[in-house]
Amino acid sequence: PFSQRTVTFTNRLELTPMCQYRAEDGQAIGWHFAHHGRFSLSGIGGACVESTAITRDGRITPGCLGIYLDSHVEGLARITSMYHDQGIAVGIQIGHAGRKGSAAVPLDGAAPLADFDPSQAWETLAPSAIPMTEEWPAPREMTEAEILGMLEAFQSASARAVSAGFDFIEIHGANGYLVNSFFSPIANHRTDKWGGPDIGNRMRFPLEIARSIRAVIPDSMPLLYRTSAVDGFEDGVTIDDSITLARELKASGVDLIDCSSGGIVGPSGRAMDRPNPGYLVPYAEKIRRAADIPTMAVGLIIEPGQANEIIESGRADLVAMGRQLLDDPNFAFHAARELNHPNPFSVLPEAYGFFLERRKLR
Image 1 (tube, rainbow, N blue to C red):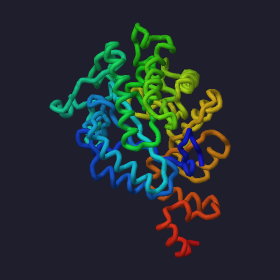
Image 2 (image 1 turned 45 degrees about the vertical axis):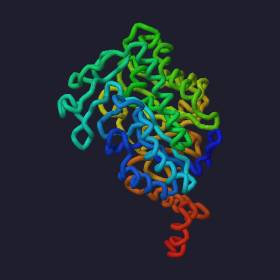
Image 3 (image 1 turned 90 degrees about the horizontal axis):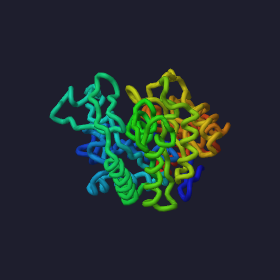
Image 4 (image 1 turned 90 degrees about the vertical axis):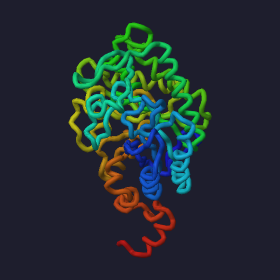
């Protein structure tokens, strides 16, 4: 088990946020309930609901979940109750797409809506009016009033997350979306206190978000932050920058850093690092040790022994999986058997484990 504040993860395996692109005006539908129902019975230690927009124009695509209306709470509460019924801690990742918003869903190619379907497109916002690539529309540079309004939107979304019964909140500060774009010198060319070459100015927005959320959620509730540990491009965020940010986030009430990378230009996760099993784990290890804060490792962690080594060696405190759990929702049970857990059937819900044990799998 692993505990943060008063929340305990029954084991170190967490379902990472995975956008489903099936929402209707931000509302969860039957697909989301089936998707999470599947993992609520899987034996994982924790789960995090997909990146959920704090404003309507903060969605990545028209199919993204939202937490900008009170009416969104009911559907999200159905998701939390499924996990709670099985004793699984569940959180929600909240964020704003920034200049990467107003995109078609991936199944339609993920192109800018301005090109794919202009009737659905909306204006995007960013710290500076710099498009993600030459093929993308330029965002509008946010005014200070809009920045302050965004802090309030994060607070309101967090209050709704508490109402929906989530056990923890994760700020999406990675992969080129709004919070990450404020921190990255590639996307933030402002000349005021919210950006520019000074890292203290570029950290201001994510730190103020953390403080504003901490002020409205229970002290017992963990606050996580997903970071892009490196931009992976020349003149972008470095691991040393992210260690500095992690230290300040810890001082601002953040309890754990979820370590991704890339995405400031192009698809989320794209960076100079070529994906291979565990390729992001070194970032989680470096931030954990240098900033003295718990971390979560992600990135092609696909084998039980590999996942166990990450935890056993102290390289991270939690291991998050996405597509591996899509491929094998019972990964936790299979890992328990492979790693010689004294009672692997106990990892599963009792109604499953009881009968599987009597089948004498081996």
